[in-house]
Length: 190
Image (cartoon, rainbow, N blue to C red; front, side, top):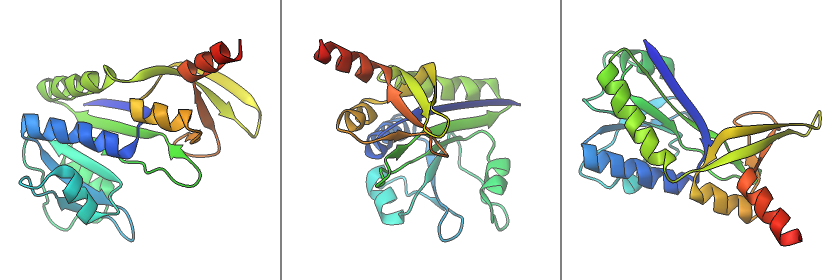
């Protein structure tokens, strides 16, 4: 069994557009997952534009993509049960911009099928082509910093950060400063 995960920053609507492209191009099945007020996976109607389907199902916090139909055996009551039954899917968190900022998002797959893993990695590489790379992670509690050269962010997250929206860690109080914005700020200051 192979697990692949990637954490990054992405503007939610922009990420939905990338996902919609994959769904249309590769005829993928989609499940939208709601976690509030209780967990509920909902099959997205393939005849409806993804952005519209997600808007009707809000609050959607994650989508799962699959090359085959997703399985809904029995009465799924947790996300863990859903992911256990649908191991070959690609799960993508959809983080909204809040008053605090934009939290780091993630995508992940768990599969034992090398062809499926290669397929998902090809989608990740497509997304990676448009991403910026490099960030400083700052812990405001301890005032420690760590440069993460492989941390990625989409053009939409880049613009949000440029406009002053804080780029938050997936949990806690840590935040990111994107390296390419820091270099730009240094050039402007000269």
